[in-house]
Length: 211
Image 1 (cartoon, rainbow, N blue to C red):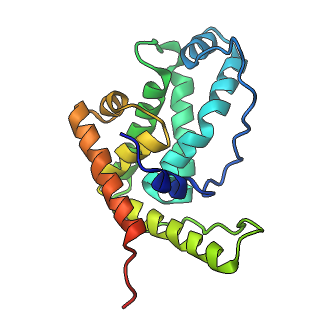
Image 2 (cartoon, rainbow, N blue to C red):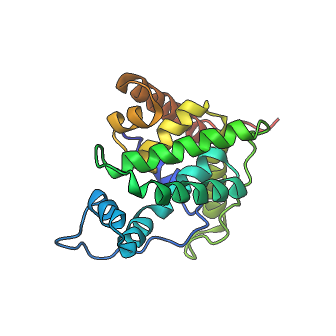
């Protein structure tokens, strides 16, 4: 179940600190992720570099929006890829590589929360500083406020709903994959995403009034 375009667009707008993805023309015989991981298992470092370039931005955004803290997201990001490196000798393509990758990221986040009992929902995300040059100041301000409302709404979601939503929208995982990553059944994963979407939609449509 996909979120409506307004939510996806607002959540994804310009908030990643990493370099933007460079979309190259599709390759006819581009190897899939699992094949690359198996090549890396055999010592092909270049295969790992391709995997890293493919997934680094989405994984970083997932972690950043999951925990709401840049320093924490960067630490967990490094931990995730360190675990992928260590897992190369035991890796088996029993599921899609993205399921494996996001399960590692999910577990690293859970471990981070357990290590840091003071983990809280206050966000340190920075507002977008560079709007469209053709936009009026009023429109730029409104877009910035909409993004801020959404980021705040993301941080107020229950962890399970936020995680499921981000796995869907940032990771592009199916409901079956989300269920596998988070250790629940498909219907539970579907419900979590649906509840998250409804709450985020409310954050867009009904911003809190100033007191």
